Length: 176
Ligand code: IMP
Ligand code: MG
Image (tube, rainbow, N blue to C red; front, side, top):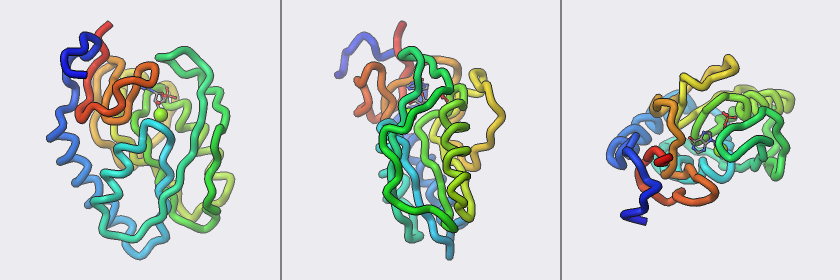
């Protein structure tokens, strides 16, 4: 993949990702001590971030996944979301932390928050590795955020363009 001419500027180098993920894990460990933590990863992009985050936690937790499809083009979501895979876990009365790779318009996350809130968890928060503040269309609060990035299409560390580039150890801009 080195030398691939679709890989543009590096937005977040690998060392910064590692350092920030450890910091976030420390905050989550502190905030969820004594709680009943369920990490909910949103497939597929969040898998990389989630596994690194979880490896660095020192509180017990369960992990589960949801897969959603957002209608729209390859680079823009519409906010109309369909659940492709639902949770296996019952989250009623539990402390749920949604782990997302990126919050772009926020429409996907808004849908997920409403959907999961309807199952009556004790608490429901968001941990997003990346946010693009310039693109936000809905007002939502992520308790934990890794990095704010500019309005570029990002690839790597879970993020794909047409299912490619997820395995890059850094986050780069897609060269247009
Ligand atoms: P939103 O609903 O607009 O917030 O978009 C959410 C989803 O779109 C994310 O979970 C990603 O899967 C995808 N997405 C948004 N921006 C990017 C990007 O820059 N690169 C890769 N995927 C993205
Ligand atoms: Mg995603």
